Image (cartoon, rainbow, N blue to C red; front, side, top):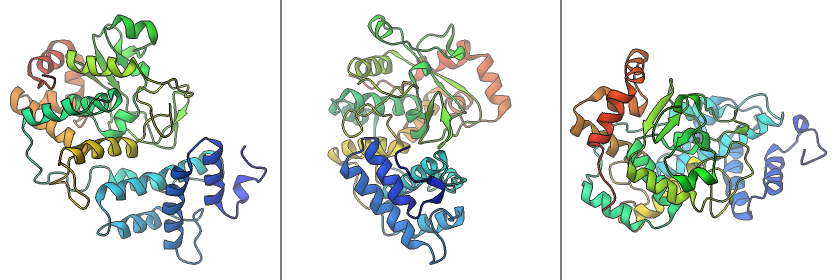
Length: 344
């Protein structure tokens, strides 16, 4: 424990959390960002309510108060900070639960599900990918684009969830040990078991997966090359879960969280003229835009809504079962025949 104080008896849980961030090696910039958000949340509570007493309604009221004055991406980042604070404090026994769990679940992709979005052509998206030279950034954006997965699902990928037919990568890493990947070719496994604040594969997660059932997503040659280029430079990590995507700047070697992925996408979208502070979902390119791009293009080319819904992970159990049992014949063949090409 980072302090002699009993965590359940803290007078200032925010200070305790910030102190532990220091011991975990977080930079002053990161600690300052957390403190700014957490103190703002604390000041939003009535005089008799402390962060340890706050309910999900207090958290929802805080998030709601941010809207209008901040971009949705910033609101999401603030919510993620508060979520991580409560997840950590629950884990160390200072709090009895995480009131942000329900708030995050309700926030996730509930705002403007089908807005009129920026119309980006496939050729323009190819130019966008070509402009991204950092192997991590290209692999992250490429995975979002070519799988349609949610940002939290990308963050939760571990090496055991990845199967790649590359001799050099397989000599360096132990990949694809999930039973569901046995006998498969290049694939990604998305688990329904990841929940923010709970331990999975030996690591407490900072994001939840929204899928109700497991999904195996094909990896084509383009995505394989992007992920392999990333793995060739991937830093070592202290996490026993061996995350696929880890930071190469602040938080070196730590699992990327959704805020970091949104920052990566925003950085490149801004440089490309596809992101403006204050712009909404109809104007700004975000990780969720890539899910929209994937869905639109693959649905239009395949004409098979069932396969697309299976890959997105948002279908009923009976349809999931249909495509799970016919994965090799229908899902992979349909995907490989129709998925768009990104690398020129």
